[in-house]
Image 1 (cartoon, rainbow, N blue to C red):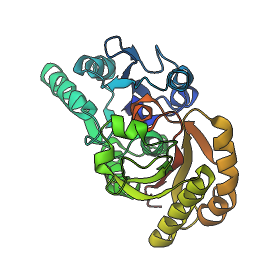
Image 2: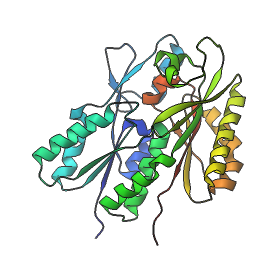
Image 3: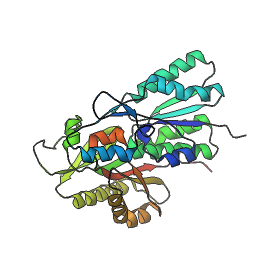
Length: 301
């Protein structure tokens, strides 16, 4: 008989609510504030479209996020522990947030109270839609009937393969959020530049600049191509998606730019488009756009 395994993630996974519900993923949301005092739960109390709309309408306001609390995680874990269901909790890279530590503390509290509880907390070393692909991979393994320990082992084997290549509308939010210091070479005084950013192994890196939005998206495509060449990627081996902020129509156009490449190199016909949430949106502003790619776990036949 197939063992039930519960997949939990913090709100940084940035998958549509319909998809998380379909896959049975329990999401522990981050909190968002526009005034530094009053915080709302992302998705549950503040719709992501409304979040971006507020940023567009009030460009002088820089929102903040707060990580899920220990209590939030405790309340997420406890019902599954009570019914004897093992839990795999996947969190945003610890280099970006203390969410992982909240989850670990809650797990330790649960283990003290419930003998035999099984909870594994994984640092995805990823974030946003790429974290979403990682969580979906956990669901794929679960749905194939892979056991609890084997799912964990296979997830840990693939997380370093994850990459995000993206650009933003301006560097203002990166500067305000303190991320600019991590992107060596981005001059703070340069106006109108469109930085190209790569996330890998839990860190962000400067991958160049352009001065034109279309050029920046073309360069994202180039960065993806270079990664596919570097890894020798073959069709059927990778998961892939597009992440965007406020402008869905731009994301659809971007998909057209990538369609042939992704079909030829990855064998993917339908490219998912997922909205980047507030956890990352507070640092990128309302106009991030890019791609996430992750190697799938190998299953012995």
